[in-house]
Amino acid sequence: MFKRFLRRVEDAAQRRADARAASLAERLRETLPGGIGAEAVEAGVGLSGRGLLRRLMTEAGLRWLVLECARDEGRKGQ
Image 1 (cartoon, rainbow, N blue to C red):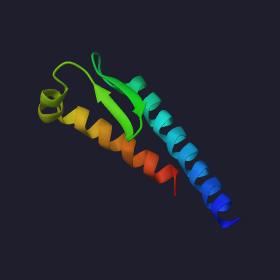
Image 2 (image 1 turned 135 degrees about the horizontal axis):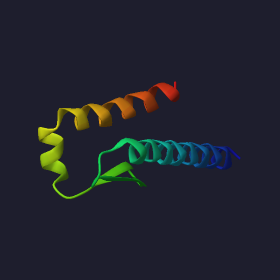
Image 3 (image 1 turned 30 degrees about the horizontal axis):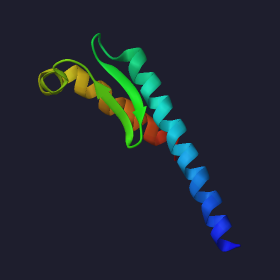
């Protein structure tokens, strides 16, 4: 009985994590500059685009946007 309960709790937690990742990916897609995509992946949210690493290192506004969205999502879960 306890194993079934744990499985239900784990499933519910996974569904909630997936929904939050999808929500964050959607917010990022709406606000990220052109050429950068966001999608929900198993580990959270994945960003993709040509020269993404260079852009993250050189564009302070892009770094701020990504961190701000992540921080806002963290507040929602509390």
